[in-house]
Image (cartoon, rainbow, N blue to C red; front, side, top):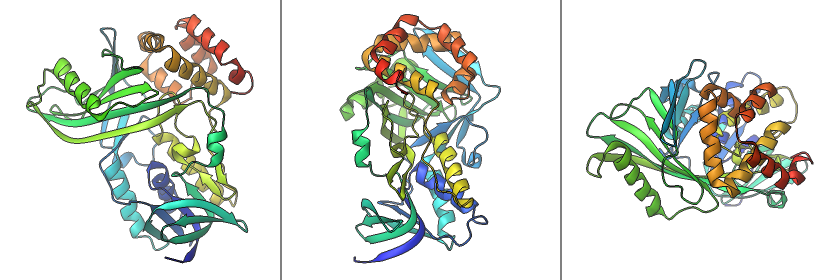
Amino acid sequence: MDKEENYDYIIAGAGAAGLSLLAYLMDSAPSLPKKKVLVIDASLEPEADKTWCFWNQDHRFMELTHHTWKTLQVVSNGEVFKERLTNFGYHCIRSEQYRRHILERARQAEQITLLETRIHDFGEQNDRAIVHTAKGNFVAEWVFQSVLKPDSFHQAVVDSSLIQHFKGWEIETDRELFDPATARLMDFDTEQEGGLTFFYVLPFSQKTALVEYTIFSEQMLEENRYDSALGHYLQQRYGLGSNDYNILRSEAGAIPMEDRKVPGFYNRRTLNIGTVGGITKPTTGYTFTRAHQHSREIVRALAAGRNPAPWPGSPYRFRVYDIMLLYLLKHETDISRHIFHELFNKNSIELLLRFLDEETKFTEELGIFSKLPYAPFFRSIYRMKHRIFTGA
């Protein structure tokens, strides 16, 4: 199809980042009147293929929360660290419900156009952004994209690069086994598979739970090895044979864990958002809350007549923490497991959640690190000094 259409804004990619931006744009309609928005993705069909977790109470989509846990648990070296949260809840949202809610609202908005097609590339001409697709070219004042990595992405310095890869089953058992008020955030007491390895259990009722097998390593596994590990864990932890539960659905994914500084722009009029825009926390993979923070800032800028800005990245000291821990996760897996054990053994889970959100004070961070073994971090500082002492 040979055509070219004009819009004010184009959102390329309808994942968590793109749809959160769309929602904030729709919320800001009085401040951005009559702005035409085009949303493009290869598929706009909601799928139950992801579960996004967060613990920020001030959240735009709390009404879509599928389940909340007030107690978190970590298992390591035969010990169980358990804490009832007082200032947070640990929440999850299903991708299917999230996408369906936002897209149904978009279909009712006169200024929003939804298009299913494959995106080839992004260009610019005369201070306008161009999206080249299989169904023609589309032009806008700004494009916000989460689907393609710019050439500059591959030119950025990266010293530590891992993948957080996982597969999960949502199961229903034939008997009551789970505590729906308690989420198992990490269970490290399993065979370490070439990198830091743990299980993650989110119970939705006494008979249903999402059980995920997660590994931080350089290579993914063959599909059958994830399934084998999940089956073994259910047998070992809960005494469940393959005939004792039904798999209601499965989900899988791979999240980059890198110390790379991600470029904020694809070109001068195309802003990178989502994981492509660097919002993923390098050492944990948490992305959902940051996507919403970035969306709010983009919409505020547009409403004020300012150019939208890239995700600013973490403050310097948190960049350093991420660089050190990524180095250890890549090169010293056994030490990394011990470090996680000590983190949960000697600190409250709520403090660690605030630390992961980069909301702790420096004095609190000193307290956290003072309780950990010093030598591994000194080694990582020495090995990564070329990054740490040049701005990370």
